[in-house]
Image 1 (cartoon, rainbow, N blue to C red):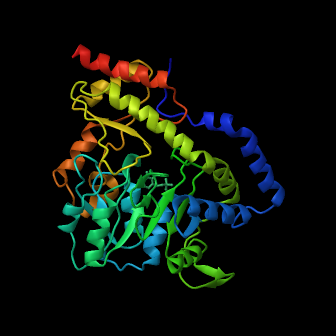
Image 2: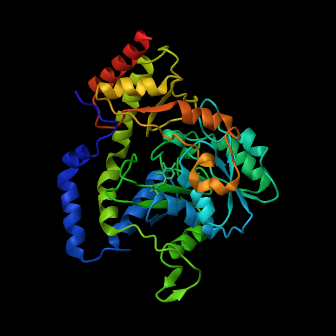
Image 3: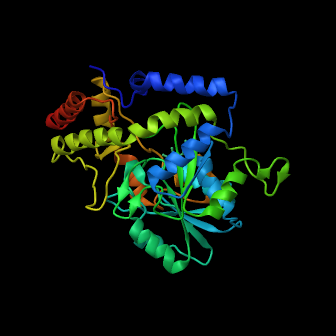
Amino acid sequence: MKIPLLDLAPVYRELHCDLDAAYHRVMDSGQFLLGRELAAFEEEYARSVGAAHCVGVANGLEALQLVLMARRLDPGDEVIVPAHGYIATWLAVTYAGARPVPCECDERTYNLDATRAAALITPRTKALLPIHLYGQCADMAALNALAARHGLFVLEDAAQSHGARTPDGASGALGHAAGISFYPSKNLGAFADAGAVTTNDAELAGKIRSLRNYGSRERYHHDAPGLNSRLDELSAAALRVKLPHLAAWNARRAALAARYLSQLAGVGDLVLPFVPAWAEPVWHLFVVRTAHRTALQQHLTAREIGTQIHYPIPPHLSGAYRDAGWKRGDFPVAEKLADEVLSLPISPHHTAEQIDTVCAAVRSFFDQR
Ligand SMILES: *Cc1c(COP(=O)(O)O)cnc(C)c1O
């Protein structure tokens, strides 16, 4: 039995009637950008998050970038980002003309650590940009308190956390604004690139509405140098079909994660995901750590079990930031995570038997050692 890390085809098999109807509705309408489907999706997504506004954009990277552009950062302004995570978060800061300032993560949750972030704040610091990594919210209560003390803007990278919650609400409504990705493999994914910004700030939402469309509120009047970053009607229509299923899909992921957590407890040197009592993660990925990662990955590959590494090279060591002057040893926690993390198969369309097979294969690897 082949077990892929992720298979996106079953979603179409599950929802093909509604998806086909949505496709025909858009094709018949003749309107493909900034139309009725987008307006309806924005309203429905904002409501699902508990935010006042949602602005659909072309992808998650530009969602983050547009928020920072709307904040009008100056060159030399600093935005604190997690040292462990996906490079898009850092690139959004770079493209907005500011400087990403990496911060070591909490060793247990792998998320931005408020205590360490506090030590990095300078007069140039303008914002905190936590990622809700692997589907679990960063400690937003601590980060928001820190931001309030220093007058900082808080932008959530909610690309991996659709539906994740804390006692204060849902991911996407926990800071001043959130950048969301609907990349096909995310918990809520389109069939192309897509993204959104959510916020309770009407003025900010208005600026992003303009900036996503060449900085224009009125045709051929350009108030600011914006981007071309629009969420298209076909994607919006598909996302409207999928959104009502998100909660059930996330519940399915949680059930599979619980299976992993009970069957892999105490196995070898595995470090399993840590969930704080207040967190309600949505298990975008199920990530374990081991010092024997390469051998474990080979063992699973030989048994046709798909795995992946999220992420093998911390952004500070990537070629994209070659000229920034960071070196190995600057962020030891992030570097250790990059060396040890391994993502195991999880999705709403995996079966319990498949997860049991993966667990048995992982156990057999450590039994042999
Ligand atoms: C996917 C992702 C992004 C970028 O989203 P795109 O839609 O691919 O541009 C940003 N941050 C994180 C944490 C992501 O996982």
